[in-house]
Length: 60
Image 1 (cartoon, rainbow, N blue to C red):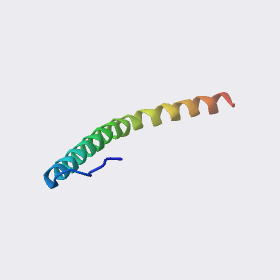
Image 2: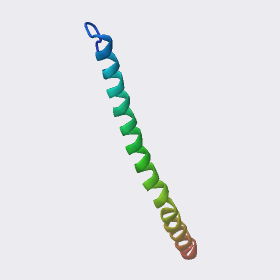
Image 3: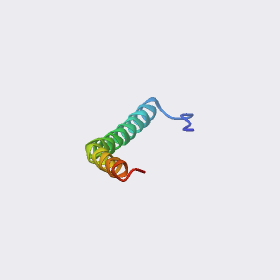
């Protein structure tokens, strides 16, 4: 836990802004990864459909 004891108001605000910037950067990075997953999802679904068609054709 971050202790703000003995810090000036300016230091506290600077720390808060730094933490918010770090949080926002992490959120943007996660959003980018989620976008990559979303873009790859149709390909994965099509591959799964083909696999199921193949299994159904062989009668398993």
